[in-house]
Length: 482
Image: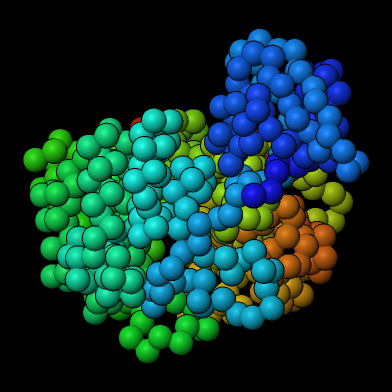
């Protein structure tokens, strides 16, 4: 087990006053060596913690004078100090198996660690979950937890995970729910495998055996050009329509029996099926926003001024290994964009860069809110290929190719969900793109503010599309793959 290393100290904090230094290793707190940032936070929560530090090859003991509940003021290097619990499933739909060679090593790490599920919203299959893990989750109330179900049929689930423990590991789901732990589930729907009657059986299984689940997201198989699994294929529009229809049918059943909808279809299904997104109220607080469920609707609501709409946290792809704070995705983010967006002389237009799906969502929102002069460029994802079309998986190489053909005087805005510490998945940096690009937080309110800031003379736009008494985002039109 490695000790957490201090990477930053807040000015004026108890840690700074006590003499803690950047680079120190925290060997123990009040005699206990923390296993992860969860235990670390609990240990430093108390009054006057005694730290044993590793420094310059020696050991230093410091007592940090502070009251209970006062932050220590230290940022540590990672979320887990012992070994990450890696995944021993071999799912044919796993996206990590579909990554090309030569990317950062951290991106190839498959985890199945309940602690990362709690901290970052990673989905765990529970196949490596133990009795001791259950005791800790219950004792420390590590909630919510996110679980990949895929199927409630034991044999089908084991076959999909290619792990015999997949048939029995959902017993831990029952134990978590019985203990009052909030659990959100997902079903990665693979055409011809767990859709149709199998998905119907899964919904019935949720109602019968796991009615305490906070939510269930049905998300489509993500298939890159690097997949080597012959049984994995893309959804057809008809299949996407069937998934949406089944989900909405079961929403009615869950409403009748449980008083809530429980199950939701990912935004990609509505785009593939050419169907309009449901209203914001039907997402019941957007519990799986970061899983791509209701993200488009929440973005539109936020862009239209509804501050209560879900705002996406800057999680990005594999965020826990590449730049997310050790405290987890719930930690507050400092403002990411300080660059001035005011238009300079000779600037012709503002261009928003997004994935193909994002462009389909953005265009009607902008037109309806009076931003028809703002251009949206949907960048094709040739790096991954397949059906990968979300903004969070945009790469440097694809943006470099697209921007190389663009005007030099435009203002280019990019959602920061595709970045981790300024880097794209394929390693490139924003500042190395062939045109100046400004990263903007990936929520509607932030984009609207950035657009208004592009010109001091710009007057607040008047909605052009919706009738009086509605907002520009109350009816995002049907998408449809182009």
